Length: 71
Image 1: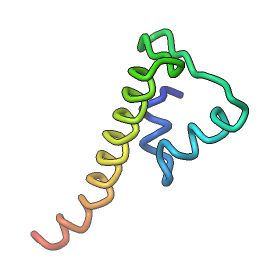
Image 2: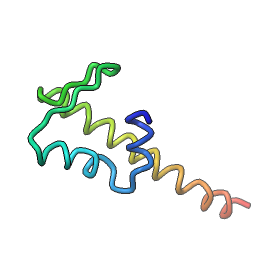
Image 3: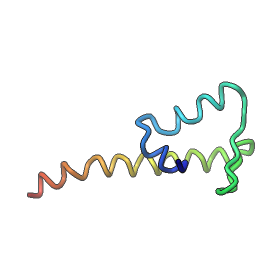
């Protein structure tokens, strides 16, 4: 499963994805995205991806309500 899809499906978003990694003191490297959380830039990018995924999830959940209100 791709990172973006996982973050979009997760109700709690990035927090529950990163927590187990942070607890053991590990860093995450995603080669396909050139993302490495051992650097501050990598942590920022991971949090931005999580924020975008959470935003998309909220939009998708609101769509049926908007369709019912319009019709």
